[in-house]
Amino acid sequence: MTGPGDGTGPGPGGRAGGASGLWAALGGLTTRGRSFLAAGIAATVCSYVLGQADLLRVGLLLAVLPLLCVVVLHRTRHRVTGSRRLTPARIPVTADARVQLRIDNVSRLPTGLLMLQDRVPYVLGPRPRFVLDRIEPGGRREVSYRVRSDLRGRYPLGPLQLRLTDPFGMCELTRGFSAYDTLTVVPHTEPLPPVRPGGAGPGHGDGLRRSPALAGEDDVIPRGYRHGDDLRRVHWRSTARHGELMVRREEQPRRARCTVLLDTRRTAYEGAGPGAPFEWAVSGAASVAVHLLEQGFSVRLLTDTGSAAPSPDGRAASPHHPAEAAGLVLETLAEVEHSEGTCLSPALAALHGGEGLLVAFLGGLDEEQTGLAARMRGRGGAAVAFVLDPAAWRGDPGPRARTAAEQRLQVLREAGWTALPAGPGVSLPELWQLAGGPGPAAPAPFSGPSGAGTAGGRP
Image (cartoon, rainbow, N blue to C red; front, side, top):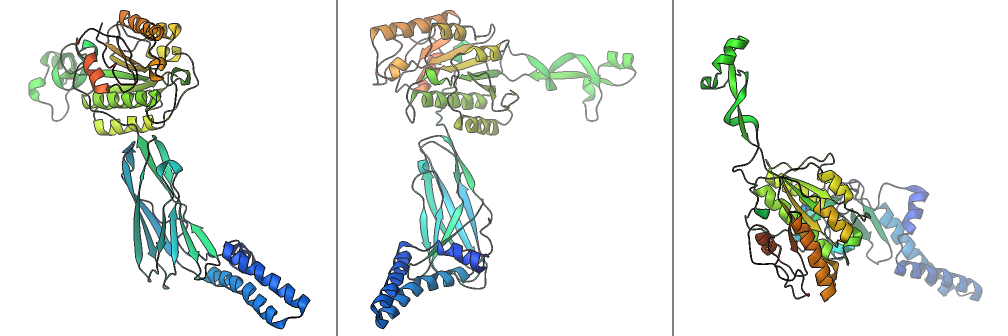
């Protein structure tokens, strides 16, 4: 919630006084006020030339009226505070967020007619404007509006602006608040079936390494006795050797690890905006990361540039607080953009010696990049690749393009990847299901825009 900004204190009318403040207030003359002023000056000049006293009185009236409105409006002082409440502050694409504005009159005088508007980026919709009638001393007014976006990103809301106008519409003065809020639009995520991708056993079952902790099986290395330790855990042989109570250390399964690789090369994708292949890849990476965090994985988000996210030092998102870690990943993906790189070698270097499950969302691959991607798979972990071919997304399912795409997938499969094609209209949950089980034989890798082409079994 945004607190009172710089608009607190004298609102429209401000503290500025004297000639400088009054001169600045003249800039608030509306088209009507400028027209009256120009007509008044013209009538005054004509009355002097023609010697018409009645025309002089009319000219003075027309010229003085807008100037009088400026002086009165400039000397009108109001003390108002403005606040904003954004609910929620993070939404997926195409969802709505509600923005509630509140204006409080903290002065001893009632306000006049106020026009309230909030600045929002054009992608969130038109700029909201409200007309507030007289606010009594100590009173308040609340208005609300909704925003939505089809594009992910972080968008500033604000600052609030109050516009005061005179009854004749001759002058408008605007005062703004400095505080603003930020709306985060994250990628859309889809629920995925609870399968083991690539046939790996990434859960908490057999085959996982174990690390010392406070519960689990015994370790041969004892430690010193601590207040509250169970006396049944005392290691008497070590106690006799060290001359103090020693207890057996315990261990628990280490969390399974996963790296989600997102190919952001500009040259690997075609098109932009909602429905573009790059947006599908970002949404897919978000869905997989959130799903694996919910399954207890420790997730690291990696891009083709070799930079790890969400933490700058490359640490994985902690699975101990899945909701918090998922929010961190989603906020990171909300701002991810195309990279200017053309090679996957930085990602290969970042993955060197890594372990655990690897899930990659790859754009268009040539022969060289396919070879680099094939080498990313670790020796002991499963690897799943969702390959988005530009030819399929632009509706070019020709025999040559289909053959080239199938050859690239075959290279990845021979390297141990579970490589699946992702064409336009493809369903990520269905692909994820195929990545976790034997499934049928893989048909043609890509199809036309109708959306078929979700198939692709494991090699």
